[in-house]
Image (cartoon, rainbow, N blue to C red; front, side, top):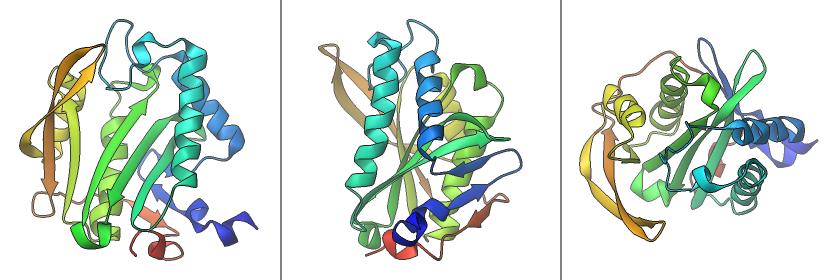
Length: 210
């Protein structure tokens, strides 16, 4: 069976309303459809990835390619865990936990997107809490990092509500112009644990820590 060779398929994070897990092929296609339908209001640019300017077919394709790329490049030293966010089996979006040299640095980075129709209902916060539980309670991380555009009020609010603190800025190029993101850091001391059921971690723990 596939799970015998890829135990990450058995990893699940279960919250009050959501299940976070790796999607099967059909569910991945459904998640691509969610992205194609829109992940933010027209004209907004909350991500460094320029989804605003891409047609729906390209947004869908980028979801597939990004997911497959992270699967194919996985090593215990450099990994990116993308999980579909599901409510009652309905795909809402994707969240991700990334790390490089995690066994040494004990730091993770997060990113996420949800379909536009699922915004404003607390799903993003709930899914981020689940990722942080996996990082801190499951994998013994020391810090979680994120980068957010300074004008992305929604993501800024979620991060600060969860206890992240300012950690400087980063500068990138978007559409030929510089853009500034706030770097935010959540330490183990500031993390507030919430109930999350983690299933299947022991079968794949060695995949995260070399």
